[in-house]
Length: 313
Ligand code: CP
Ligand code: NVA
Image 1 (cartoon, rainbow, N blue to C red):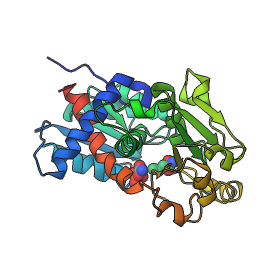
Image 2: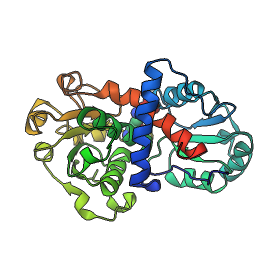
Image 3: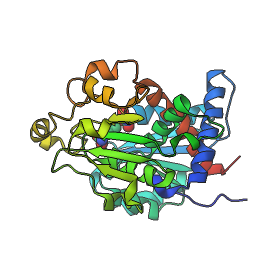
Image 4: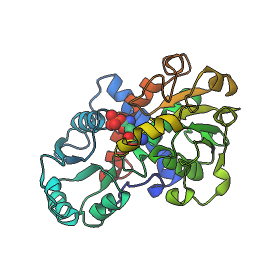
């Protein structure tokens, strides 16, 4: 039977039921990885990875993950392919997707990945755009479930929880909103003015899945998870100085962690800037799970690639 063509361009491209499957599957795949038990359902499959922005975690997690599953990868960047010489994205998609089984793209506008997907014969995965970073939120939720829930009933521990988002209304914030909307938790969002989240970008259907707070300390009150990200995302470097000034009060510190629930977790998608968006004492402290979060990118993405190519096994 041929697997239906499903792209993963935004968090809400999959259903809650799909995520329940994927989190349980990721737990199994992770267990096998830890015990050197081969898991190679993607033998002879090839993943093309297209990077128009820098990456450490996304590249290594997809590349190592694909090799571990028996497959191969092709790595392309704007600078070393015709993408940087204005070959139309539609033409690139038609050509690349005739030679590989799966494509991961990290780029600027979401419309670019949508245009690629519309012309692709194979599933396309969003490895970060200006608007969304769904693979990261999948890893963050899996990390929360590992620490605070049960991978056998993975979605149960998310219901009714509060995630405090402190910082920029960026691709990560938009994706948190989509996840809250789909999986039944609430995001407390605190951003400086001028950097607010725009719920219409996330396309959320339930306005009660997020609450806006002017004061970041108030956003953290009663939170089960406190999370943040860089003040300046890739592609916005020209705004760096203005952002450093605007975001000065949006540094996750010990007071914010103390305002959260006693066992609240701290997450950051990384790379982090200690002393800017987070104090060293927080990111290197006992509530931080950032290294698990980074590692889990690989386990959830292995489950995702397997699912997009082979369906539920
Ligand atoms: N979190 C994340 O996507 O990291 P990279 O930019 O290193 O891929
Ligand atoms: N918001 C950040 C995330 C980096 C992984 C960026 O887009 O640069």
